[in-house]
Length: 570
Image (cartoon, rainbow, N blue to C red; front, top):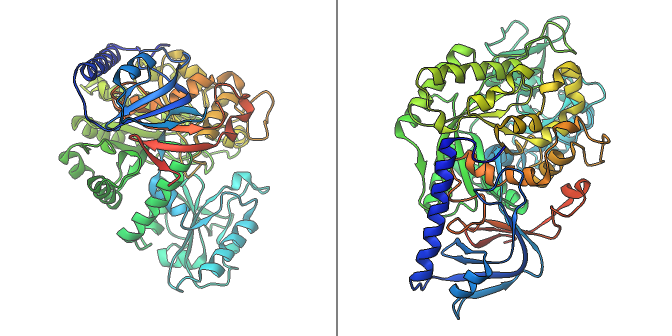
């Protein structure tokens, strides 16, 4: 597959090439008194817009920056454009790469995790309870304050069973406790929280949700998908100041990992307000492509207001995040056949097919990009059917609509993503985190279309990669490692889980840079280090194109730069 997969792609990339050529020509012929920066003695790598997917990146040993943008990486041109007062930085032989873009993450969720109980490393239910007890002992919250946390994953516990309120009730505190599952598709409550929500054994399951019950029909304290709203509407919202603090924690964490851009998958009004305020004050330290929360009551109002983008290119809001189904780990992903490890359960439709299509039409009519969460094979099939119906009734495929996750796809549906000109926005670490659980949930037969990166690329499907932080670590080199090796950090399994679906290092790096920019309509401004684009880049010690694949996850970021300014370390 080449990156020039359609006529609209050709037009966009030819235009980009022409713009870049015009940009350099103007600089060569017009005197400039702008502030320049030269970074030399580096081993630089960048993809180019016109190169086919999988091609090797171009290399350079200097980069000249003017007015926060790349002026040139060509030595001959740099020599002609250099001025006596150009600031020079010795890169000391480090590797310089385009800034990494996470195409699917949750800024507010990461900030909340960094500000609450982190349960991602809990090995069983008792350890998780002890972590909550330790947090309460250290923080000493007001007796009426909610204690929040996230990250537990019963699929990684020996029992493989959902936790219950009974274990949380042993904690010596009167506080209501609400702990989100690692994927955000289930929440675990203590009895105090259950009582505050009004949930009892007779409370019916809401549409698209489930209250987990024991063999006697008693509510156990775990709510799935749409049932979670029963508790979340009872939790007081955080203040604007607290949200700002949490987002700053997210920004600092992401910059330390080499991330210069994020596609934030589902933002509400408080987050929108803070991001816009920061953009206006020029205090956004990295680039955010925001997806509006499609389940929010404000959706129609947001769409009528139109897309938003600030002049400096730090904040763009031009897409909407929808949910078709739930997650595999909580058995909420919508499947065509029963879960292999739970007969008579085919998962949940968070949004049923008819209302999903209606939302597609509403969003498409306002020229916003659709980004729809679909994990199970039935969920993905229903999304594909909805896009097919949308385009047959005048929908705009040029908006680069996306399927977020696209985790389990029926083999007969895999080619439809390319046929419908959709982007598969996928997260490589999900495969290595889920591999054992996925085998339990699906059985071997349905793994054929699961986490099928190689197949989708070979079909000509446009793709991009992310992490789904804080569900997974935000470290992009973890994702690059998983994409190339299909192994965990212990190099298991050998030679890799369903290794036939792995991608090359060139493809993985491109999907975290150039293709992520394209998936957000940002290819003329970011994603590569070509003339005219923002000077977003990182410096690392180890060369991802040279190290052994099993060492990719160990790569450390030395510096992170956005718009030609060092943003990390501070």
